[in-house]
Image 1 (cartoon, rainbow, N blue to C red):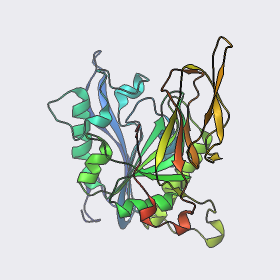
Image 2 (cartoon, rainbow, N blue to C red; image 1 turned 60 degrees about the horizontal axis):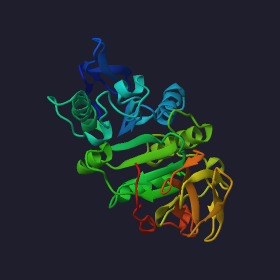
Image 3 (cartoon, rainbow, N blue to C red; image 1 turned 180 degrees about the vertical axis):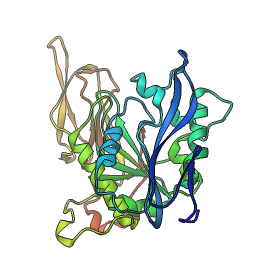
Image 4 (cartoon, rainbow, N blue to C red; image 1 turned 90 degrees about the vertical axis):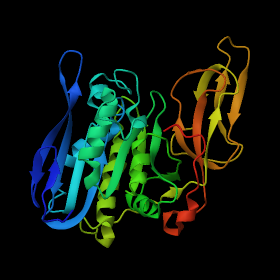
Length: 340
């Protein structure tokens, strides 16, 4: 699409320099309430990439909704080169129901590219794919951890996507992990269309973490600068924090059931043999110490005090020993046992 041509979302056209919000019709709920998707469009006067920012594919993951809400309120986006397409809540039915899933218990992030004659979720995915995705040149999709299992802010990229790996460096999260694609996910569909995409994970369901919001906002600005949509930072304004590129990740699981007492937290570096926590018999007969078997960084932890045998307690990213500045793409190694 030429920068001089109108960008059309639904029935609304946007010329360079124009901004607005479109309510895309999707369907209706049991009580005849219409289901729409709110799409914010901000076109710069100068040509550039079209960056798609999405959140709320899962209705209980609020961290991305807050990140995009704050982004839309900022004045730092004027003027920009290119276009921003921002969808703060992709799955409105799940968001309103305060649920991860659609009313029929389906996961929207397994229904792409959808169908105009399928379920409500399938129709929603189809509307998104038809009306929004064709405009995008790059994408960032925001997610959060599960209930009681927060994630350290991190970026996940698809295998064989060097452009996304470069954008991940610009995002500058604490950790970048290469993860396989899930059939029916938005990221898999974007990959099939050769659209470089980042998946942000941070915080937990139903909660808003100030730190995750800070990392997410800073990351969006970093990506926009790397794409030339915003002017570069002055040298004295550049962030000094390094990004770790994980060689692999693994879960530490409960060796038996009991009360879980953690002794480390998100963002903590651990060595092989580090004491991570304890599983205690609630009846006072024994305790079992949990140790790390690898050198790594804690990127996920359970906040649940109940633990059954086999429950995931800690998510560890192995440390490559080098920072982002020294990290070529081959330092990003495939993630094992994904829970995305």
